[in-house]
Structure formats: C-alpha cells, structure tokens
Length: 572
Image (cartoon, rainbow, N blue to C red; front, side, top):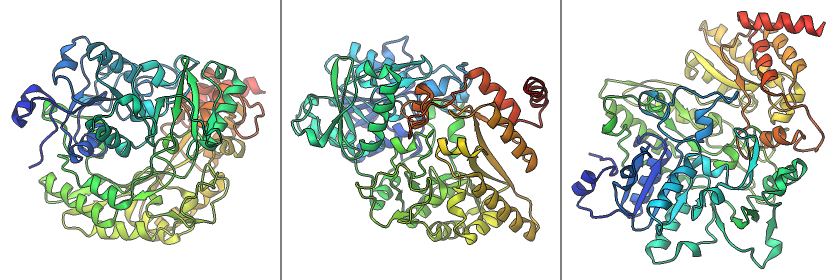
C-alpha cells in the first residue's frame, strides 16, 4: 500500500529517520497526486533516493510550523502551490477572493500574498545556513524583472526579492534532481551556476556571443525599455543564456531544461502516489482535487502560443506525450481506487487535449523562432492527424470499469478542422453534455493581438459539430470561453462581440476579465500600451471599461441589457 511523504515528527519516527534531506514548503494543501506540483516533485526526489518531507500551508504565526520537521540536510524547496498566490487571492478587479480551490473546504487565507517571498524570508530567518530553492508557477513567471498588476509597477526578479539561493523554472524535475545530487556530493549551492532550467546570481560569462544582456530592472520601468526587454526574452530565452541586473545583482537565466521523453514521463506517472488528499483533511474536501481525481494527464506542453497564457513560458511548447500503456495503467488504478463497479473518466488531456501525440517534423529545431506553431497559420512542419488521441480514447474507453470517458481540457478548433473523424468522435462520444472551446473573442483585431485564430475557424467547427449531433439525434452544447478587457479591445469591439453572440444565439454565463499575469506577452502590451510585434500604440482598457465590456457581452442578462441601453444612449 502506498503511503504519504512525511509531514510530521511522528511520520519521521515511523520511517525510522532522524532527519530529512529535503523539505518542500507549499501554499497548497498536500494532495498526493501528480497534478499537484509539490507532491510530484516530492515523489521524483524520493525516487532519486532522497528523504523528502512536506510542510503544506504552514501557519506563519508560529515558528513551529516551519521547525517541526527539523533542519534538512540539503535544502528547502519553496512553492506558492499550483497557482500564483496573487492570482489565487485576487480577481481581475483586484478584489479579494473568498475561496481557494487548493485549500481544505475551499477556505481562503491559508497562504500569504507573495507566498514564495514570505516563506523564503521565514526560512532564511530560522535556518540561515540552509539553501532555499524556489520554484513553481509563481517563481517561474517572476524569474526576471516583470510587471506586477497588483502593485501596478515593475518588480525585480523574485530571486532578488526573496533572497533565495537558486530558482528553478518550468517543469523542474531534472533541475531539482541535479541540484540535490550536487549538494549530496558535497558541492556548494553557490557553485551551481549552469544547470538548465535555473536562474541564479552569477557574473556574466566571458563568451559574450552566447549570451544576451537584458535591460536591468530599474530601466524596465520605462515602458519602451520594458517592451524591448520582453521581445528580447521571448525571442532568445530558449536558445541563449540571458543576464539581467536585479536589485543591484546580476542574475543568470540559463536556457530551459530539456523536456521529458515519453519513457521518462511514463516513469513519473508510475511513481507510488496515493492519489488522495492527506489524512489530515479526512473531514474536509479539496475542491481542486475533487475536480481532477478521475482525470488523466496525457501530455505536457502547448505550442498554441496564446499571448495571454503562461504555459509556453512554464511548460514549454514542445509536446511530451505519455504512452497509451502508461495512461491505461493509470486508468486501471483509478478504477481500483474508486472501490466502485465503474467510474467516469472526466478528462484525458493536457493544456490542449488534441495536441496529444503531435510533433514537429524537424524535431523542434532551435533555429525556429516562431512563438506559436498555430498562429498566424498552422506550421507545415507540424504533424497532428489526431489518430493517436482517437486510438487512446478508444482503448481507454474499453477498459473494464470505465463506464464513460470524456475530453474536457480544451480543444483547438483550428487543429480539429483537419479531421472530421475527430470532430465526429467528440460530437458523438467524448464531449459529454458540453464541449469547452476557447475562441476568446469575435473581432479580428483583438484576436490578432491575442494570438488566436480568426472567428471563422470557431464558426466552422461549431457548424460541423452541431450538424453531426443533429444527424445523430443527440443534444450537445459548445461552451465558448471569452475574454474582455484584453489590450487592444475597446467598447466598439465589445459591441461587435455582443452582436456576434446574438447573431449565433450564444448565451454565456461567464466571461473572463483579462488579468495581466507576470511575463506573458499580453501583460507586456497591457503595461506598455504597445503592440508587442509592431511597437505601435494600442488602447488598453482600464477596470471600469472592462466591467462595461463584460456586461455588454452578457447580452441576455438584465445587467447586460441595462448597460447596453446606457451605452447606446451615450453612443448615440
């Protein structure tokens, strides 16, 4: 029977250990499931031969919360959890949220704002000579100078702000195992300057041609300089070593670690996860776990290149797919663990479901400087015939104990148009009652700034999908994800999207307000007011206008009708 990683002195005693090698601090509740980053890293380090413990959501009013597992022999690993703590805590209107999907019973307030900085500061106070390694989405997307929406200013790298020893970015398995092995071999944390997928304090290398010096954090307060810095980062971060002065110290940004191979990804998901919340939460529910407990991850990475999305900078755009055998083996574990006669697998997918099994015919060469394999047009070197995913769904759906199987993790409709067989399978078998798509907007100028396909792709997919459903006599619904307030949008584009929704008789219950999250291309446009590619000025809607855009788009609701009347009178 699989057991949890130690979380208490009693657990250490039960293991017969007097000390741990590594202690991981997380802003999330401890759920021993591969979808929860801290648990995943813990199991990877355990498999590499290290003794690992976890302190989840420590109560920082008591030092004992961080002292309870003692002093680790190698390092502390710190993460805010699966989300940036500021995104987790605040809405796009900067209003405090009252729930937290990654906490027991959805309780808010169990992690601090800017969790990585706060946790690291406490650890440095209590354990002055123990290295601290920071990672996860919060550290990854703040690894260099970045615009912070919640303070409305450019902040220095989180490495400088937190005073951590080293930052690992992206999917950090390789980097963390390399760091742990080096420290176990007696190396000093300050000597680890060249590990791929890390950012560290270091002097600039003598080989200037292989590196790029970015404008420093103070210079990036200037909007044109910030725009220049962002363009340099996005064009070179995966092929060159970057340097940037932050807080008066030089930071070295190493190129990303290589993506895991298919066998490596299979091995990772075969680690002995309990796939359950820790027993400390036995009288509570973790909303995020409830949502994913019967889902399966099929791959990593996304080459869609949406400008508002953090995935490309965090997971990378190269696709790493698990083997069908690995995914089916995990499905059998889900059936066994459920204790029921059968289960519904709520999702098999990744950042984008229908990228499973796809690849670049040229092997993702470093010479390719495209930010997206799909925008503005689909790259001719991309191979994605959907057969791999269809075979996976067919085989997984036939497993004993799998009653139903769905695709719920988002489908790129522009890719799907290349395969009517795939659209048919979604419509008739795998969409469930609702299929989620992300056109994001209806207007060409806004979609171009988002890095999204034109709305005609969505309309054609919808036409084919609904036609197949009608022929089969079944009811399905496509739920479009829409964003208002993106840089370059305005009231005119909101009016046009309202007309488009009415024309197609689409009633959406929710519309997302654009949130400028650190390091994305869209956030650069928000801060600078400049088109990322051309440098030309664009309109950036402020919170009051964003609310009006949202109400206009919700045309069928009373509030939307009221705003439309006021807007019409004003416009007239």
